[in-house]
Length: 294
Figure (spheres, rainbow, N blue to C red):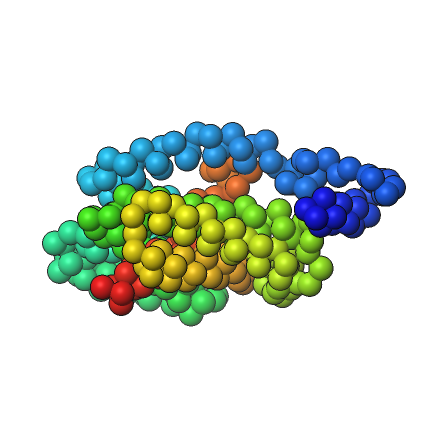
């Protein structure tokens, strides 16, 4: 049965590839199904994944510093997307993100609020001074700083939980499976566009396959690690949905800002924000679910 499912999909995908012959038993090269950038993606993963798993294992303070560093790099990318070659915008966004992320898991909330207030005032003045697109730039800068900073801070709070290491691993497996299998499923079976005006390459079939596999991966790990059935079930349903939604949110922002990738620091993936887009929404979603479930 699996053969009958895969073969028509492979033939249909081959028909969309120029110069590909599609006989009854034609085989689509694995690199074409996974994407031409699969090799740099894998190399980046082989380097990055062990580092992330190690930081998650050791916990604070290294994990918190790692999350803040990701926020810092993401802030640099965000500032460059909003207004390239503007040092003040870069400084404002990155400082705000790091301070917000740090304030969430530390006792620096009053200081962070002062920094955020300065950001709001100086950022508004600078945006108005630029005149062109000042409201758009200011909105993206402030909203992006809160979005990225809060998400990175909540990751640290989740890790501080008694089951924090397991919860972070579960979140990451769900994220990675949802993202990877959505791409594979879309290329094998994708027919119907999910959001053509936001991300033309994404399909309903790919999204469904990705979220299903993300849920299965995260749910299995959660149960194996000893999480209650209700927690593992509800958390992974919402994390899978949030992962896809976070991807679409970043695609929408990039389309509005007329950029293809947030950066180029990660070969095969693009920028930091391209890699953690799903996590940025999944982290607060998981935190909210855990809070509501008690």
